[in-house]
Amino acid sequence: MVIHNVDPLKCKGCGKCIESCGLELWELVDIDNGKKRARVIPGAGEICHTCRSCESRCPEGAVTLIDEE
Image (cartoon, rainbow, N blue to C red; front, side, top):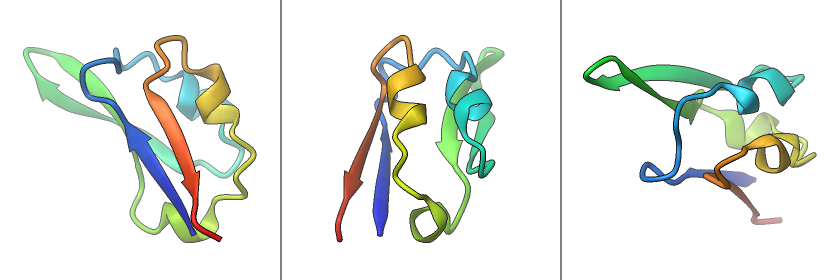
């Protein structure tokens, strides 16, 4: 299982993680004042192939993956 972490202080809601994920495990959600933040869909930890493209494409370094296998 993979744990996806998004640092709320770093994420700017640019959507690079969404663009990079071929499995469509990410989405943008409204947080406040028109700002958005990335999050993974429910069950993503069981589906993720741990390619780390979301992690490497994040310009803010907000995304980290932990592979618990």
